[in-house]
Length: 234
Image (tube, rainbow, N blue to C red; front, side, top):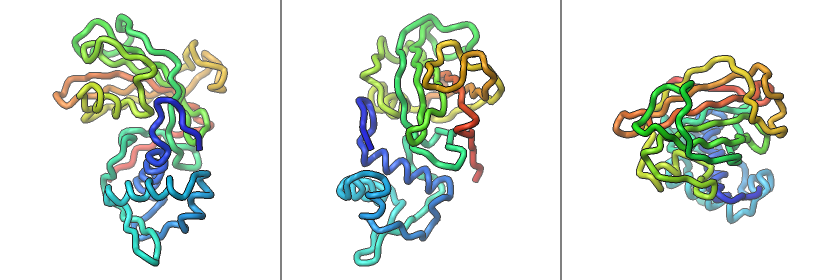
């Protein structure tokens, strides 16, 4: 696995991939993981990196490491993950989310968006979203301009919510998703694989901060031949 500027460390990428598999039920409570050397080989990482990921899972209460026996999944109802609100999966299930920032700009908020925040301006972030390396979606995120004067691409991590918490003191506490059919935006890069103007599933998300104010509005266009939107109820 390769790491790019702004990415989570590789061991945390592996941790998050396993957390998503536990949350989705692909790894079940009590299941014994493959031997560490086999897992590391399958994931294309060093054994030491895998062990750091497993230690992080253990710290979150999601793994029991039994000396001389192996590693056992301890599924919980609400695994802590920086991708806890991420709803796209590969068609075959799972997939490690990564993001490539295309553009960041501070602009007047467009009239087509629902009202949010307090500033007339917002930070517009456009990204390509991949799942285990496959291009799956385009994202256009608008953060209210009152939270920070400026954002650069170099500031951003794979998880915007993690960036919000650690750099802006902003917690996204809940979100509302509205799913409909839209068309691929005209700024879609060739790598997306779907031509601008083609019909495509679309998710409009309104995200609330810890004080209940809608701080962010995002739009996601996802390639239904690659990914699906999944929301599991417990």
